[in-house]
Length: 135
Image (cartoon, rainbow, N blue to C red; front, side, top):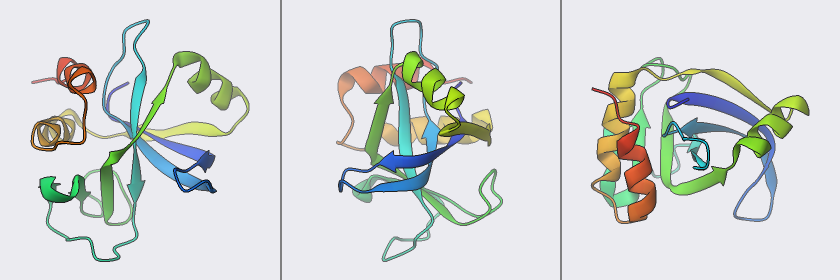
């Protein structure tokens, strides 16, 4: 479901390492569409702490407690994981992945609108994201 926040144990990262991570689902897929999940981080490094869309860095910043995360969190809009439903079910059964909660629709609409302002998303994926957007 759009807005679901998942904990994924030992997620294979683009660096080749595996790490426990939180992912945010940005679409509600139909039967044959992929689940679009984006990586999060709570590591500030040199990331700006400006609430909302930081399009130049392909980030969406959510302050701690607003609405779901315990820590200040950046959703990395250039770190996409596409999964099919079989993978989601398999990881759930193996206790490698579980849903922790849901980000409210208003915040998810803000995130969806942020995708319109970045270059790192394909037209196909943008269509899936915007199709799932709720008023």
